[in-house]
Image 1 (cartoon, each protein chain N blue to C red):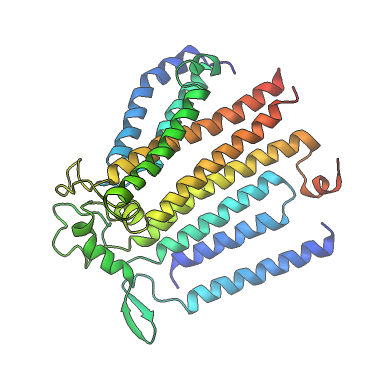
Image 2: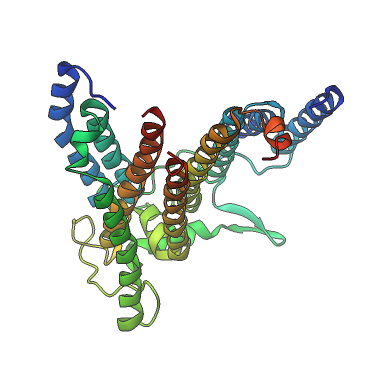
Amino acid sequence: MAGMTIIVRTIARLLFPFMFLFGAYVVAHGHLTPGGGFPGGVIIAASFVMLILAYGIEQTQKRAGFVNAEVLESIGGLAIAILGLLGLLMGGLFLQNVFPLGELGHLFSAGNLPLLYLSVGIEVAAGILLIFYAMLFASRGENE
Amino acid sequence: MARVQQVLALVMIITVGTLLISAVSLTMPTFGSFPQRQIGENMENAIGQQILENAKRQTGAANVVTSVVWGYRGYDTLGEATVLFTAVVGVVMVFRAVRRPE
Amino acid sequence: MSLNYIIAMLLITLGLYCLLLKRNLIKMIIGLSVLSDGIHLFLISLGYRTGGIAAIVTGETMPGFAASAVDPIPQALVLTSIVINICILALALSFSIYAYRHYGTLNPSEIRRLKD
């Protein structure tokens, strides 16, 4: 899959950190503003898709490849299970809150809610990127 | 599909649509009447009202929807994360089989 | 008699029409997506309070928050449902790509008839 012209490549390279940062902001402030892990993960995946469309698949494989996306998705799913078992061991119920509650409106508050949203954000971003890679590899194999 | 089947399906869809629109405009509680619901014989407050009152004290999150998604209904979100994982595995598996005959 | 409910039922009817009477797999999948959009709109309009505010506690809305906020439960359910719809859409589209590779056509009646 070839890339695009030099104007598109320059703008995509300049815009990528801002899109990634916005997606990470939506994921991290899930317990204070609307949003959370699910839309934030989709925004992060969309920033990687923008890079793939602008530069072509061969150059982006080195940074955010297929194997990295598979490993990250499994880590995200495992983190939810580990947090639940931690609540079972130390609290008595599955997914019980064992972290301090903190004050209202601060970033480090609300117990294990920000940690849960962080793992879900990583899982959703890696998952949607993986779906995109799978469909792309199938159509590339057909053209050759 | 044969001609008769298409006409029959169209008639059924028009019937279902008329039934839905008439049911929604005649027998629903008024739009905007959130806490008052018909529970049993008398009008009481819905369960969302209790969650709105106690969420700040019990979870400590400023976003009440987040505390519902992970605090009061955490099992549903756990199931949804599992469904997402399974769907991604399924899609990768289908396209691995497409790539193989080449 | 409000507009939200009527438009939601209209969307459900249109999605059902696309799902039943079109002869292309991709158009049927689009009808499925429109159908679920109608259902989500209906669910969220159930929890509306007249003149209400969003269900987020900030510094200004602390007194009298529980008497003027909208229902948070349907919003959480619709969040889950949207993510599950993404999964259904991805799997359905990948199966239709596979069927197109194998049979050469996207017509569901012909796919049923050619038994390879």
